[in-house]
Length: 171
Image 1 (cartoon, rainbow, N blue to C red):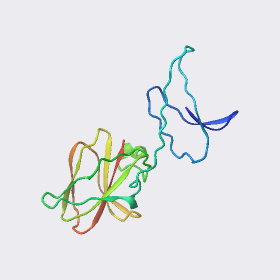
Image 2: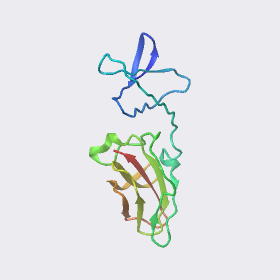
Image 3: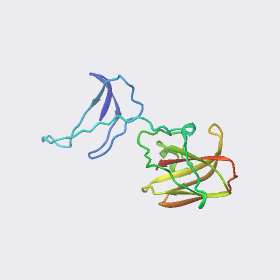
């Protein structure tokens, strides 16, 4: 369990169960935090705590989208590096009704369409969602929203020369 405050007036910020990764967003630099480990019995047990301080990735928000090239021969988009949502924050609610609150860690990519359809090639683990938007970051228009599966996600109805952005987030 993670606390802030001072002894006698601690406030719980987050609590997890054994073997969990516990993410505590919005920590402030220079503030002291307290970690507590405890178990279900009064017997002694070893506990290992690993603490990682993670910054938001550079493509955490729409304006920082990493622009990807469109492969001329196939029209495919390939994210040029492995990405992660670790440290990412929520840009907006999830794009499908059952996962609106789950979009708390999206990262953004973009491309300039060269035709009416392109495929985004992904090899994600289970439990990620993809949203493709047109327009601007300030006023996006959703073009595609779905839970991802490894392989190609085909995006249709595009206008050549227009910039599109897509976000990937865990659900």
